Image 1 (cartoon, rainbow, N blue to C red):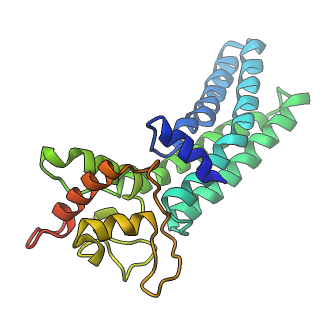
Image 2 (cartoon, rainbow, N blue to C red):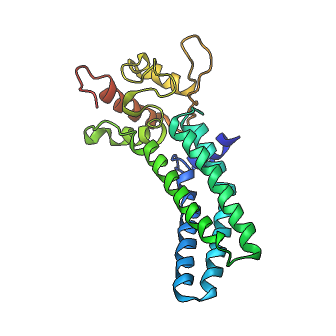
Image 3 (cartoon, rainbow, N blue to C red):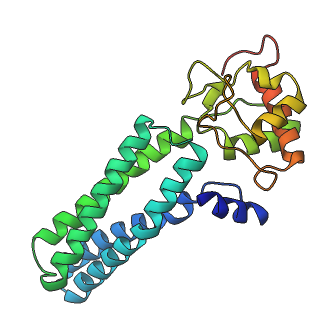
Length: 239
């Protein structure tokens, strides 16, 4: 069902993961809750404590769409592969949900409870961990440099492929790297493969198919040219 969301977004020109758009909400609300609790602690003004509680309530509410779109992105861009970073993000997301839920329950009756700052600070530490492992997923996937003429293809690669094929590898099927893959030897074969990817035995693998709405034929050609340069050009040094 999630592919309908991505097809809709692709129809208006958006092909990136969706989770990063929403993740700022629980992060910002948690940090805000800590800041306002500190203001209440320093000034003695209860209004700041009330604001801190309201922010943590909003953080709790935001998890109901931030976590699902994170799962959708995992299915779409990582082929549901249980990478270490994914496991850590899943565990920390569950922990964050429990922490903010507890803060909502406790704070509803006892907003001045000494437990509240513990929960506020714990929520911030948790989102820091989530941010770290999210950064590992994104910034460990550095893509090879290429001349300016390949910028469009490189952008398509970063948006759709780099999660599983960082540096030309294959994190899901390590024995089938992108670098020097047979699908890169001709464009028609490459286009056919991304439209209907199959394992060598003809079975369906983890790689999602990319419809023309997700990656147009023109973008596919730009992507192919970039991949050919980055991962198939003879004697090109590894990145």
